[in-house]
Image 1 (cartoon, rainbow, N blue to C red):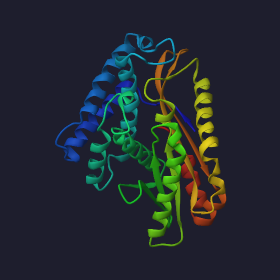
Image 2: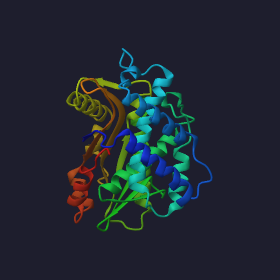
Image 3: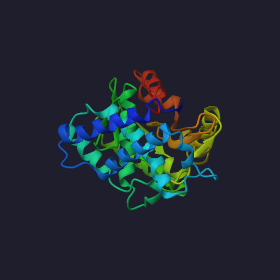
Image 4: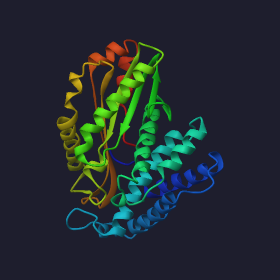
Length: 306
C-alpha cells in the first residue's frame, strides 16, 4: 500500500507543538526532548524555504542530500510526519505512563539518521513500534503497547502478537526475522489461551534502504509508487518469502514498512512517502481466527502510511 502525506508543513508543526504540550501537561514529562525541539525549528525553516520556492536547493545532483545541514532539514520532516501520525493515533492512549516512557525513549539519539549507530538506534526502533501502534489503532485495531510483545492486538476473542524489528543493515534482515519468530513462539507458549492466538513479524526496512543520506528523486508520484513497491517486494522475495512454509500455523504473516523522503520534480514537492506490504497466510488466519479472521484481514489491509 502506497501513501503520500496528507498534512502540510504548517499542519505538522501544529501537531508537534501540541505534542510538546501533551508531553508536559498530560504525560508529566519534566523536559522537552532536544530532538523534538530541533525537528520543530527545522520544519519552520523548511516551510520558509517552501514559501520562497527554494526547496530544490536541498537536492543534490546525485539524488542524495549529501550536505549535512540539508540532510538534517530533509529528515526533520520525515521525523515530523511520523510524530504527527503517532500523536494522532496515541494521544488518548491509556495508561499514560506507558506512552510517556516510550516517547521519552523514542526521542533519544541523533536527529540526523546518518549519525545513528548500532549503539544509538534504540530511539528510532521504539519510534517504529509507536508508529505501527498508532497506525493499527487508526485502522480500527485495539493495539496495546509496552507489554510482553512489542504490540498486542486483541480482536473479537482473538489475539495477535506483533514483534517489530528495524534492521540496521541489510545482512541482518534474515536474523531479525528469525529472532522475531522465536519471540512470537514464546508469546504463544506463555499465553493462557491455547486457541485464537497468532503472530505477525513487522519489519521496518527504512534504515536498510536509506541510511539517512539519500532520497528518492522522481519525475512524478506514479514513478515513486512503482519504485517503492519494487524495493519492498525485492526485500520480501529475498528474505521473507519462506513465511508460507512455516510449520507453525500461528505465524500468520509478514509486515514490511518503508518510510522515506522523496522529491517530485514535476511539482517541486519535498514529501514523505510510505509503502506497506502485508503478506498473510490465508490458511493460518482462518485456522487461528475462525470467527474474526476475515475482519482482521480487512483491518490489516486498510492500514495506510498516514
